[in-house]
Image (cartoon, rainbow, N blue to C red; front, top):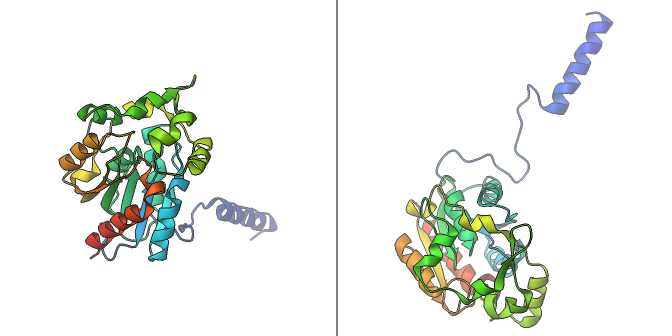
Amino acid sequence: MSPKHLIRLVVLSAFCVCTGVGAQTEAPAGASAAPSAVASGPVRNVVLVHGAFVDGSSWNRVIDLLQRRGYHVSAVQNPLSSLADDVAATKRVLARQNGPTILVGHSWGGTVITEAGADAPNVVGLVYITAIAPDVGESTMDMFRHGPAAPAGESIKPDDTGFLWFDPAKYHADFAADVPETQTRILAAAEQPISGKAFGEAVTQAAWKTKPSWYMVTTKDRAVAPEVQQWMAKRMGATMVPVASSHLAPVSHPAEVAALIERAAKAQSK
């Protein structure tokens, strides 16, 4: 082989290594390729999906409790820019789970898991924490027609870009009344707005139709009326657990939330 051809071969080989052309790639450490078969075995994975006006840190105390019990827990950080964007963020986290997984949604996160969990074969159960649970063709807003209007509706206003914000002055009373005010002031300062159009976007599939579900009804909720929660849970055929909590149950009642998630995980372990 001439020196010129040898140089060309070395350059081409280096290009293939850098770009991955012609090579088999491996998933990053701790990740797995998208599962191709229904997962079975003990359930040790939990994926948590937050709602509007908070971020993934709203699950912190729940995460701590579940980790102490040996679960591998992941909290999705929703962009809250659209249903499709939040579903995509959730699916990225689901793809990193090795083995059967319990998918949990709080509030708006229920709409997200309803869509994202339907075609995720490693999701073996769903837990709804005062969460929205539409059927195919239904949106989040559609669910509020099945009960009385919640007081918190008056506390949510759009900005000039169409994102919805919870009034900081009413965050404690209408969103997290059983959370210390010192803590709700911090939560309100870090609140994450949601695109108003997201609440009107319909799901195209409903995971709860094919997968077992559990539902925590928060009986002191001023953001999603307990009557609406009960209607959704009954329609789903979910195992219903009432808790005397405000809407922000993952913060105010982490022990009860963690216990319900573990109950689902044990029920679906094979």
